Image (cartoon, rainbow, N blue to C red; front, top):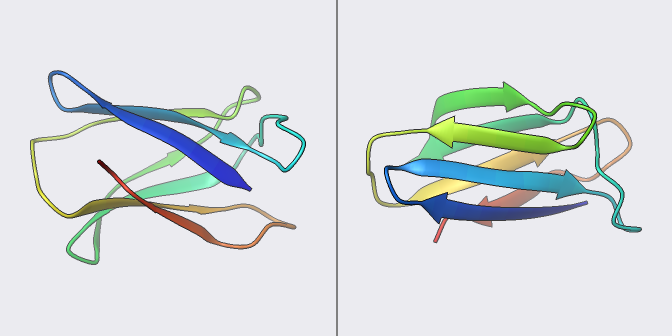
Length: 77
């Protein structure tokens, strides 16, 4: 499973959860963490997309889990 995420102006973080073939992963759990604490959670739709709106913070990371896939963690640039 892979996560493509980008930070947009105005503190918006959006991305898509994809499987190994590039197909979207629906109903994946996506957590946004700051310094190890969960600050927001989201479930992907059928298109695998997610979006968070957050205050600007440093040391953010996205943690994604879905049945049948390994846990994936990505730092937010």
